[in-house]
Length: 212
Image 1 (cartoon, rainbow, N blue to C red):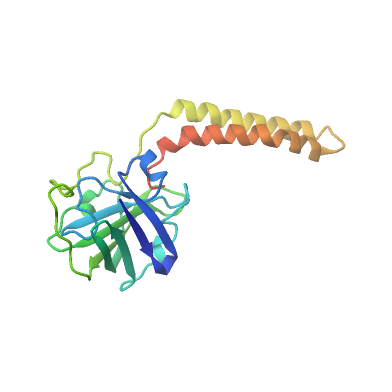
Image 2 (cartoon, rainbow, N blue to C red):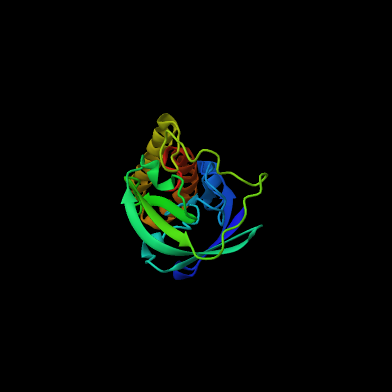
């Protein structure tokens, strides 16, 4: 639906529509129910911080006055960062509608954790776009019982595959101690372990907040 560029952190990413786990695997995602970037109101975008390319990894490095550019079919819009803050995952007030054109970027905080959300807010400094009826997504504003870009999943599968990874790793380590050339055992055990880790992560990912 657009391209997000933040020179300060070297970000140049395609923005998709939606903030579910599957959406954000593709790139930063626009919160449904908020205006499109460049339009009047508060347009909100979530992004991963440590997984799937981690587009928002360095979001905490933004400062007041830094430019943020968003390009959509309606044009290229420039925002300037006004502030950053940390909120609870359930605090959806930061993506509520505003009377002025704004952009809100959200991601998990701190890195490698999901205990809170890092929020960067910016104000539009170029003229706002019109709101064609067929493009307007503002509606009644964002509403989600899961909070800011939350995810859902089931723990049993993740626990089973996690245990399988641990068991295989321990088994390879124990076998290597009985060999004169342990590196051969490690080499042979590495590929199956990587496969197990991949399946484990596929089961774990839906359990993590979508912007982790």
